[in-house]
Image 1: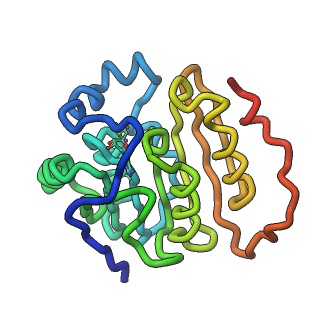
Image 2 (image 1 turned 60 degrees about the horizontal axis):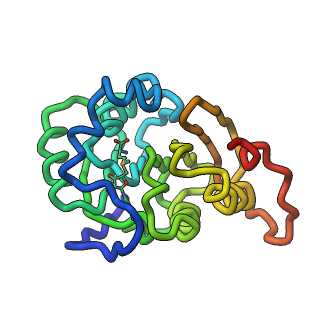
Length: 216
Ligand SMILES: C[S@@+](CC[C@H](N)C(=O)[O-])C[C@H]1O[C@@H](n2cnc3c(N)ncnc32)[C@H](O)[C@@H]1O
């Protein structure tokens, strides 16, 4: 069973953070279709469905992807939606209550200090949230800590914000800690799917040349 540590207010400081008052606006399907070619029901299909799986969405905001994830994962699975805004997570929990699909819990928290024990999540999903974290490198290390061996890490990155320069150290670390499964480069975004190796990767392994680092 997954134990979730609920924190009253997370220690999130510095960096740009989408104000909770804008969550409704940024969850507008029309705006998102124009800005990022985002189609939530289609996009979440990249996530592997497994009965009884635990999926953590880090940076759920107004729930643009959470609703689609809940339906996609289906009954018998657990979806944890985490965001630093207490107001946002409370209102999202209300909205999701009546929707069919995975059991869902919304928690106020910080992607750099995930409220899960080591090796407990089957899937981690970041929909344009890593960009806003004060320490994206620390957040990737946290992802590695909580993801179960063989688990899936899915990241959508918005290229105008997560430009090549900002992305490079993040991608380098991802390529060191995880095995890349799939990636897609869109006009505005990058969609990445990694797997946590079942066997630990030797820290001395050389980084392989990464084509994603060269996408501008
Ligand atoms: C651009 S919004 C995307 C929200 C949502 N995933 C979507 O696609 O509409 C970025 C989200 O990252 C969240 N965020 C910022 N810093 C965070 C942190 N340290 N930990 C977790 N989420 C964070 C923000 O609160 C916001 O909800």
